[in-house]
Amino acid sequence: GENVEQHPSTLSVQEGDSAVIKCTYSDSASNYFPWYKQELGKRPQLIIDIRSNVGEKKDQRIAVTLNKTAKHFSLHITETQPEDSAVYFCASLGGYQKVTFGTGTKLQVIP
Amino acid sequence: DAGVTQSPTHLIKTRGQQVTLRCSPKSGHDTVSWYQQALGQGPQFIFQYYEEEERQRGNFPDRFSGHQFPNYSSELNVNALLLGDSALYLCASSLDRGRNQPQHFGDGTRLSIL
Image 1: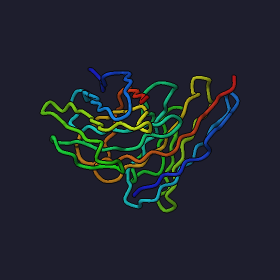
Image 2 (image 1 turned 135 degrees about the vertical axis):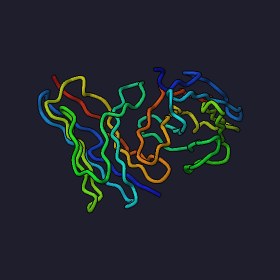
Image 3 (image 1 turned 90 degrees about the vertical axis):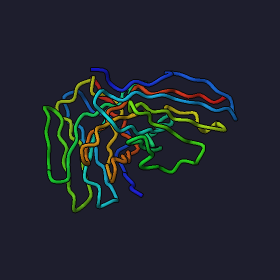
């Protein structure tokens, strides 16, 4: 089955700095890669996604890049703010929308 | 436009009991997936329902079963509960319009086994 590795497990940055979270996947058939933000005690919320026919996608301060050859994808958050503090999960989607999640990155933005 | 709703929000059971969790998908969605999220971990895929049938299943034992109704709502049943079943159970819905459709999550049901 699909395996998704996510690094780092924890990340602390100063407010205003950038944060980068990296993921690798194993199933070459995976073709959709969402990112979720989960605040403590709340539901995972989709923040950005990318499909395999695209190499990069940006939405304001958030961007995602995909390297299908290397099976890598990354989340980039610029100008971080305290409200960005949360656990971030990468995921890959194989057949029939079976989503495999990474292990999560706890991001702390220090004011 | 109602999002994904789950009930109950919290539940306490003892070992050996059975439990049923419920999920109503986001308006317009026809596919429901269930996930188990243990504390400090990512969600683990249990199974997915579409057209009232289980279409895909993760690595969970037969004690975990489900159902989807004609109105697209769904139930997750767990029999012979174990301490290790304590977790947040998340329901996610999507629209089966080809592949690569985003899933929207509910707030989950926190199940505690004593």
